Amino acid sequence: MARDWIAILDFGSQYTHLIARRIRECGVYSEIVPYNIKAENLSARMPKAIVLSGGPASVTSTKSPSCDKDIFKIGLPILGICYGAQLMAKLLGGKVAKAKTREYGKAILRARSRKDLLKGLSAKEQVWMSHGDKITKLPRGFDIVGSTDNARIAAMADERRRLYGVQFHPEVVHTPKGKRILRNFLINIAGCRADWSMHSFVKASVRELRERIGSEKVLCALSGGVDSSVLALLLHKAIGKNLIAIFVDNGLLRKDEARSVRQKFKGRYHINLKTVDAREKFLKALKGVTDPEKKRKIIGRVFIEIFEKEAKRSGRIRFLAQGTLYPDVIESRSAFGGPSATIKTHHNVGGLPRHLKFGLIEPLRELFKDEVRLLGKELGLSAEMVHRQPFPGPGLAVRIIGTITEARLDILREADWVLIDEIKRSGLYRKLWQSFSVLLPVRTVGVMGDERTYENVVAVRAVTSKDAMTANWAKLPYGLLESISSRIINEVRGVNRVVYDISSKPPSTIEWE
Image (cartoon, rainbow, N blue to C red; front, side, top):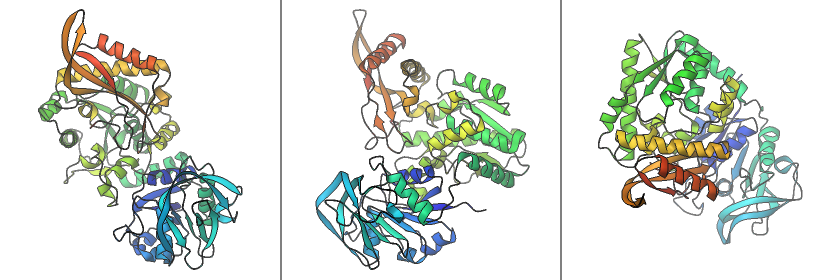
């Protein structure tokens, strides 16, 4: 039986990924597609319903993104959110104008009709607004079902055609009943089956992997991080000994990483694991390189070269597996052709050569990070591994700003080990999305033992997040920051200054490169 799914047309909102996650939390699979997808192409993929996302543009602008108008003729339920609601109104004959007062933040929605979309809500509910335009005239067939002080048409509905629009954002936590609204649309209006779960994902993935791979062998890059670990366990469950997991010691790993990976996966999980010592090869390829995009591309190229070499040694191998996640795909926006700009090339998405000699297997490609952790639990991965903080594919290469040398790598490894040790002792490790050290390309004057020093600066980064698409800098206790700084300076030779990064994403990215 085909899986019910929701198509989310992406108009560039920072919340688009959040819409997708909230829908999945309701037990329905969702996927983000380009806003300009043709109606016939979308219809051919047979979604159960469509969501039009918000976006930063103004519907009143002649250059604003617009969807294929024929989407409204497919006959599927459609929910427009913020920009999506305004676009729906405009394309169907209503009117949208610049609002005299921009509405941003909390507002009180007064529900005029508490059925269908707003079923189960109180007469007054808190919602979150973020818009500068407003719908001034309803399209034919629509009724107002909700208003706020600044938006007479805050929610509209054409119940006969199952078309709905809300001026607020039901996907954010600042709209407490937002998930109820989405569930009303998904289950009651669109008639979706709430059958999306990690248990169902495992069953479907194992079946699909076996069908595609057959008796062929698959190479899988195993780094010891959450993504690659879950990927390896999923493939092991599907194809057993036909999985050849390759652990590449590229010299860009955390302290004691190589030993730990061999011990856990070969011993505990009985995975067919091969270890390749490629430290010298990677360092030689990265010598003198400072541009972060070049670092990522070089690392991707060298990885593939190693895999191709290992493939020849292992016999006939047709497939290469990667732990690409949905946020990787979204941020490497060229894969969608949507309005969002490319933020950075992800190692799993942009680092591969055009003429790959393997078929690419990416079974985690449609999952968000929190879903990967749930999948790990489903597959029996240890709690320690499931809750491990993300580590970038290019490793410490993108945490050393500037040139990469063995000496600089040693400094960063030790500093990072101290940081994580202190974070774990404080009990904050699982509460943080990521915490790590960055080695800066500057030296500063210091005083140690009454002598002048001129040594390296380490930046400490700690953030909270749900899926890495957005992140807030963590307000670590001053006492903890003091302990981290003191230990790094005292225990890591070559460092005399520690700084703390208080930037959020956006405008900054989580990693420095």
